[in-house]
Image 1 (spheres, rainbow, N blue to C red):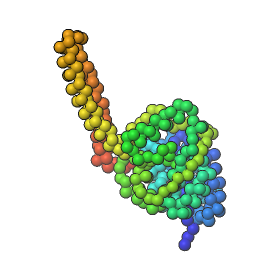
Image 2 (image 1 turned 90 degrees about the vertical axis):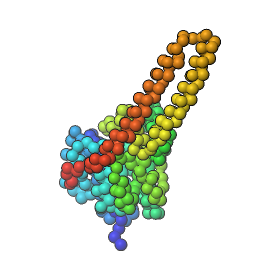
Image 3 (image 1 turned 135 degrees about the horizontal axis):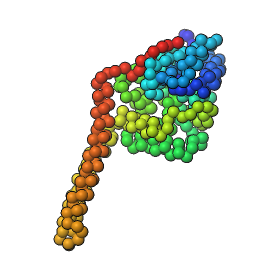
Image 4 (image 1 turned 120 degrees about the horizontal axis):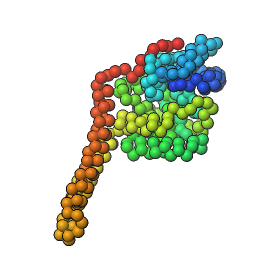
Length: 314
């Protein structure tokens, strides 16, 4: 039986400031893991998600260097983090038995990969990397992250709290993941749905050594909306509940209007006309917006366009 192999998959978008450092640290780690676990020659897959800086030139240099472990995928344009990650996973599964995805900024502590592999060798098909705390985050980042995860759980999204995309998966898991054909990918919710034996490891997220975050509040908010509408129909159910509550409030408003009429209080007709109009109008506009999100996703799915196009592989 041939030795098992490992792959690291790193989506990259404008990471020229840190990519060489990340590649060096990952290469050293992979070589250590090969020796420790008696693995075969493993690979590091770097996916350039339409970067506008010198990220791809650095990847080309790494792939043409002395080490045979680097692989480069260049997407034809910026397709988004989830699609870039998916493309790297689909490529890596053809060459590796266990595949670990992590961010290129290397804030995910690569020293816990040893523990991930130990759990994999014990039969776990998925191993999730979970943050112990957010001590390295600003107060603003802590607040928005807390809102993000709690909103996901409230909306019925099957997501693991404080887990991003730092995880180990087996080749078998990724073969099954390929069957998920939807265009609107939200991998954090899909992996728990696969149902394979899984475990968790906990780590302290490190401080970014270079570059800047690719997830400001606007992108974080958009990511949350994508995740909710791609993975849960709870917002549609909430609309029905809100509509029912609005009916009750309207009935109560009618009773109040009758009361003021018989007691000669208030401005005749103002409350019974103006307030319901504002309330119902706002409710209708919000409901149409939520329905529009889902209809837009149905529209994208029916076109069956590819999630990404790989322009070049090194």
